[in-house]
Amino acid sequence: MAAKKISTLLSRSFSSAAPCFFSRGRSVAGQSRLICRYNSTLVAVEEPITPPVSVKHTQLLINGQFVDAASGKTFPTLDPRTGEVIAHVAEGDVEDVNRAVSAARKAFDEGPWPRMTAYERSRIILRFADLLEQHTDEIAALETWDNGKPYEQAANTEIPMTVRLFRYYAGWADKIHGLTVPADGPYHVQTLHEPIGVAGQIIPWNFPMLMFSWKVGPALACGNTVVIKTAEQTPLSAVYAAKLFHEAGLPDGVLNVVSGFGPTAGAALASHMEVDKNLNLKGFWFPKKLLNSSCGNSCDSDITAQGCLQGSLRAVVPLAFTGSTDTGKIVLELASKSNLKPVTLELGGKSAFIVCEDADVDQAVELSHSAVFFNQGQCCCAGSRTFVHEHVYNEFVEKARARAMNRSVGDPFKVGIEQGPQVDSDQFEKILRCIRSGVESGAILETGGDRFGSNGYYIQPTVFSNVQDDMSIAKEEIFGPVQSILKFKDLDEVIKRANNSRYGLAAGIFTHNLDTANTLSRALKVGTVWINCYDVFDAAVPFGGYKMSGNGREKGIYSLNNYLQVKAVVTALKNPSWL
Image 1 (tube, rainbow, N blue to C red):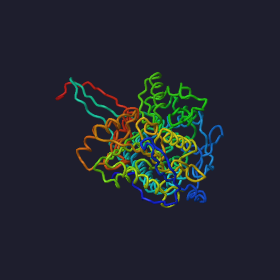
Image 2 (cartoon, helix red, strand yellow; image 1 turned 60 degrees about the vertical axis):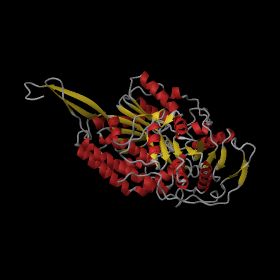
Image 3 (cartoon, rainbow, N blue to C red; image 1 turned 45 degrees about the vertical axis):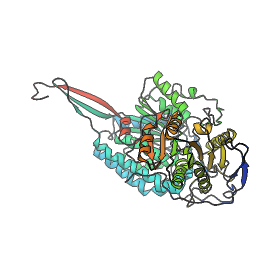
Image 4 (cartoon, rainbow, N blue to C red; image 1 turned 90 degrees about the horizontal axis):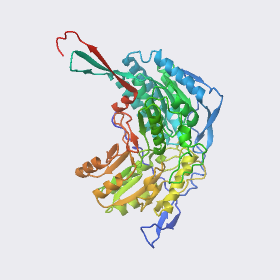
């Protein structure tokens, strides 16, 4: 399968009568600018579409069996279209994590998974990929219902990419091997690449099934067993997929799924002495109101980040974390203070999308639009800093505003919808605070800026112009449908400004000049550079960040290193005929 462009979805238009008002920005001294907004009443009268799926699995999956939480507790997972309860899901806690890790430990130490041939492991993963493909419609519907992402996006792009990831790692299973190393002396030296053991994984809510594949695929291909904790906002699809894995022939205990909250289930998994490796904390597993943000997040939790983590990470051998940079610092500090576990961090992003002077403005507007608004803007590599050359800046701003106003927003189960609701009320409120920060700092609000409709967590696609580098909306990760457009004069300037960020996850370049593309791609301090494209996520292409966007890589051959350890075996040779 060729490289899949995650943002290549059908373009839709959504026209409505839009009220207009006048606003002042600091670059238009003394002048007023006409700003158009959405008609936010249009979705209020629509009844939510009934999802074409029923919730079959709400329990924990431990040792191949669906079980209730030991405490009997459940928690509600909500429909972001309405805020209403979809289902009550088992709330895993310390005892449940203990059961899951014990099952995974026994499956690794005594079970058939690491002992069967790599080819047989590959066949089981391939059978699972086939089942996943056959159940695309149901899994995509669960993703949309639980997360709010458009059904067409989930069914036509994300689930096929998930299938592709598992087939990719199935292909790697029987190609993992060590080396024979020449030595200075009569010795035979070989290296063995061995599975580490029990892998603990915590996945996020923005791409539940894709992140499931990024984590589970390489871990199982290498012969490990897994305990995975789902995000409390989106627990439904992963447990459904794990059931299919067992139907494909996965032995009991190899893959265990625990739903629950970060400070309980997450911390228990992180601190468990029987978890050997790579606790993949892929997402925000701490209380959502935990950390301060210059966009206005208030720290009104009585649990501090330090207190939540203290003492909880001592047993994990390598550690991988994806989430906020501030929490990542704490994880790294605690890892160094405990057993010096290696840490892989995939953290935040504030990616630059650079539109050069020679750009076709219409194409650049469309590509930059998808770069920031895809998945409701809830993407760590969103191209949310749009740098535009001064010669095409005014034209670009006008067309970017028009494109955002024509973005189709509504029930994600509806055909043709590009943007659904944000995942939950906390994310919804955070984004609105960030938008208010942009207005207060003097950026020009071109369009959007408010909620969309009166129900659910919908936000109008929002575009700011006259954005300056020192504004919070240009520095902080908003994780929402907000585009900030900045003006630049030349390449030296935009390189310096694009790199003047604590983040370095990704960047986009739009130019027809090969020399310009080469100059920028080598100068930008980021882990991924897309040239005349964006959000291309092939299974073989590594993904990860520079600077405070983290270290380590997901996907491709690089991710296998996260789940293997290398052993050197040296054997003395007697009277060798050659060395």
